[in-house]
Image 1 (cartoon, one colour):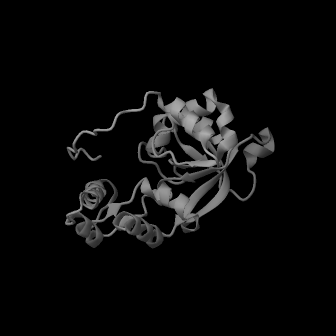
Image 2 (cartoon, one colour):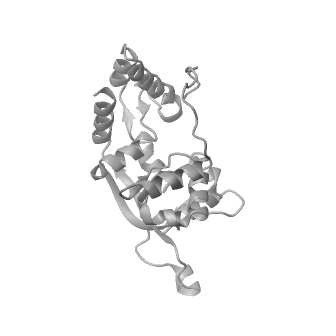
Length: 230
């Protein structure tokens, strides 16, 4: 949490590992669930490989990760996917609908300085924490004279709560697993027709993913602020 020296939690950890807990909760749900992974996908991949029966009660997986244009961990790879590319590849072939909330939209959703200041000055601890976290994120995602704070992973949650604010396109996506500078890249095929590779070598099976290409920034910032402050 931004190395903010928060007090230790007083809650007791559950007595099972994360993968077992996910299986238990997903299968026990009376209606299909939506998963929103916002970290490297190791546990999700282990879940899908160890307990494939969970897919019958998963409606969609909306993950924060990947990039169409440029990466951040490397020039082409986003951190969450780069950290465990094999896990991301397993996720994309899980057989459930997938939405990729990648860096292309992730970095655009910024909370303005006046809103951050209002939160930081609040006497309510949770609001002050929200403001401090936004302010802490600023150096990594913002340049310029007016400081703003990236909404970050919360944008992926907004995309589930209000999917109309995210513009997606169903596109073939695969993850580069090869060693070298492309490892961890999410290769998104935005071509309108096949190229020489397909003409000569034939089509390869690729996962179709709803890729986030545009986002209504004001809409998601408003949703987040109303939720946190409400």
